[in-house]
Length: 273
Image (cartoon, rainbow, N blue to C red; front, side, top):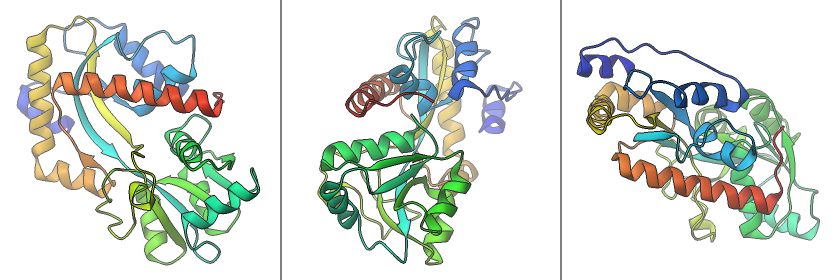
């Protein structure tokens, strides 16, 4: 996308990775940058929504310290389980209702999108699961294959080959529509949880006060980059659903995502690691 955006703008686009504090270091550096369009945040769900629900002393507010540009793509998650022991999500929910905190599930960490997706299910199903946090998708899916957890919530790409090879069973996807990568796997709504939707996502924003004409040009460039066939193919290979919204649509999306995270974090009593 950076190369396509560079072609559109006629200027170099340099990617600077700033990891740390679940994305807050990078996001805060953009929030404090000059609002001239030359510093852009390519951010994900954690730094632009979930963290606002988890951390009370953030140095920026994702709802008010940025000018939204566009939602780039959403990424459904998938509930998976050992293929040899679990037949359905209903089976695990009934076991968790009968004996709370005995059915375990893994995520990539406390406060991660995967954790919140499972806690949303827990709330809607009225079933109490035992959360096991992992340090990354690799160990998580391997422990799911080995039966060390009853269930796991994973991003789609690491799960697909293990599902196709029969080592894992895909129970449900978290999006409102089925995943192209796992077309035979039902959505939560199809399993009876109407209104359930929890995706991770990436979007673009710039510092508050960036002129509208600059935001509009960046948005046009991002949408043009998204339309490129090779960009679409790369995103879909990652299990993504390309978006390309207006700035106002993305602003409302971020507000809605923060509100959703607030509800889940409060109901589940989630604490950051």
